[in-house]
Image 1 (cartoon, helix red, strand yellow):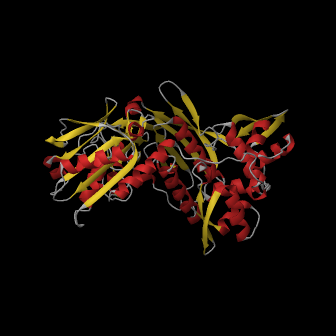
Image 2 (cartoon, one colour):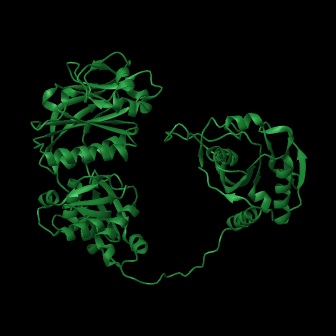
Image 3 (cartoon, one colour):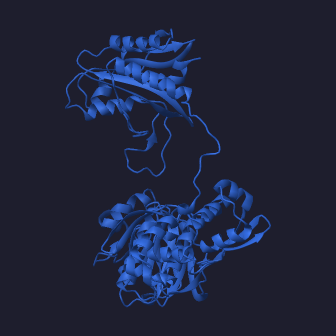
Length: 536
């Protein structure tokens, strides 16, 4: 993320040099990427979404530098606004929270920072809006109460951002650029989520697009924030980050009564989170000889309230710290506040010598043998297409896949080899490749070795010779038995057996399979289980 130097200094309340700002932000928890025209660029560690904005960095830096320690204080009042969550959204996006921030000066710096924070939260915490989606609205242009409910795709029409004509929800998903981008998030839903005011004005079609009616302008002073998603803790934490970032710019936070059928929440809920850390445990983890009072001061510099009760540190953490799950997270904060640049240097207390796992050492032997046979090693993706033409054992399904081609976890190495042949059809023949890698069978990783060759004389005989050579060279005496395998030409497939157990198969690939991979030359292949091949 980009951090404008002068903007940071204004929020920090103290002038430090550009070099000192880069140095201190780095040790606060980021990777420096450079400085251009007084704009510092950092990679922020993904466990700290509260640092995804210049406001969050300034707040953390004030504590890190000792300018303002302890829990940040944000006055919160009630807005008197209701945000109704209708039960109809339970099977679409079941959770929503709302909040109000008044009195913001929406200048270019704040608007740029706010939009950037929103999109970074969408991408990371929000899992590209699948888990969390954010709406920011001009509160003065709509009338509460607001309602979050599910409607049919053609039931409501409104003007979305970026357009001048009304569209219904189905039209937006099919024809609006944001609708096309995020339509997969709502794929298969017969109803779609919408947020309306008391007059039926559309605020938002989450997680896709806001309505133009509540678009932010330089004259906007009061904001309504909505956060919807599939996890209540995630949407609540995201709202806390947004509201407190705006408060750092002078905004006044007000709570909204978010009403579910079975409960009512006052949101944003900035109640501090109570945690504790055992100081002896933290000292052992960090290798630092910290006393209770020193540890309390370090935690206060990380913007916590803390007191020592013997060897136990009682901590009240800010509600925007979504990363605090365990006492080890507080121990990490102790290390950051102490200063990674101050850490004592020394040799490890325990000297160990690493040795390869037997399976990995044996895999290297297989690689050497196959390279010696004239084969080239390749690496294919662990994720695979559910529609692979080659028949393989049942594959585990990937939830929320990145693309439609990567929907399962591979249970065989052979489809990857055939896909590589397809991608290299323009290369000269023969092509001989192999892979030694894990496949997923059931719920376990299983190491396999597979090899394939494509050329005009590739045959069952070549596959048999290769498989038997590999068995011989690893000291195994297996047997070969005919097998009917749909991936192989009838009569040209066989199984390899050791000790009466089948450890794999080889043969000549069936022409129908080759046609599905757009291959015209014969292909022979084998695939064996490495652990069985290794034996005792």
